[in-house]
Length: 172
Image (cartoon, rainbow, N blue to C red; front, side):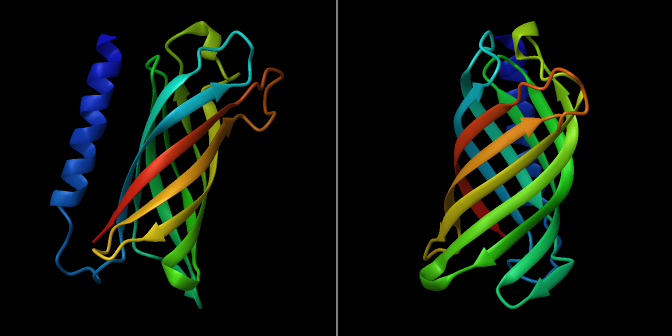
């Protein structure tokens, strides 16, 4: 699909620009970009399941206590059919022993389906996500995350979509 190709190119360009424009005055490793790929399953039986792609940028932490950091985050999700979600919200990370971590986020945003069967009930949708990850020796990380998008029953029709993603994280 031409739209999917253009959206994928736009997401890759956004990811490259965020990495390339990192400010030198920021504390090292306090911001992060993650890129993920996986599969989405629409709860509505007529929905078109398929490949999923995600980019998330997390800002400098606004709260830190012990092994927990909270940050603002923005994200862009693209589905194989061209459906997109763009959101802004809050992300948290708990660092655990042996370089493991747990990520959580809640990101309200706008959802635009390209095929009617993938309608989630409204344009305003929430994306919640939880993931388990591991820091690598080079400072990057990998994680496996489960994301859910729905309108939180703000409309009568609320089928939702679940995505399983393998994500690569680059902190800078």
